[in-house]
Length: 258
Ligand code: SF4
Image (cartoon, rainbow, N blue to C red; front, side):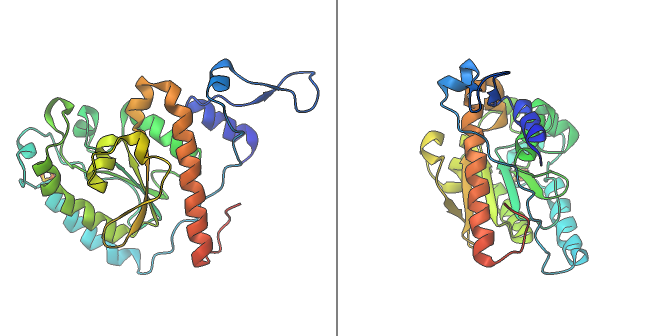
């Protein structure tokens, strides 16, 4: 991806980019005021990320995915089934290297049956595209909870406990190499901690029996309310991409990562 494409993606997520001052000497860069305050780093080239080769035919995954979907849509394990419009399973390929996990469906997701739609979803898509990911082809997006809590309240521990087995089955089917937890609630529930999001960022955590690497960043809905933190989210995405690159290098994937 060339610099102009990359800059368009960064502009789409609201991250200021370095611009050469017209007529200025080589290396003279005009830095937007907001970016100066945030001490930006020049953005690296955007890689095209390798999609995992399925170790079994996709046709073998279709049946367990369909069974899981049917169970979630008919689930009554917790009280949220009484107030939801529909269960929201997730979106993406049946097996993939990257998985994004949020908190729970909001009103729009509950209505449309897909996670991360609306303004927050558009921002998430732009953030993912900035590191070469696309929700339809090489990243799976889901939530900890599959049903919407009324009035978007925080999930209750018993609701998370009831719903987590579905997420575990999704992870077992996907076998992601890297998980990205977006938002405090998702991160705290996945990591069983009450640490703040700022303390959870910038580290590689691990999740579940597969010990899957997990990185924490901001929820796009928060970033819409607090655009000054978009640059930190961009740093998190670059960190995730570098961790993924190390992982794939270690296992010898012959990809086209830079
Ligand atoms: S939130 Fe999860 S456990 Fe509760 S009803 Fe929905 S699918 Fe079932």
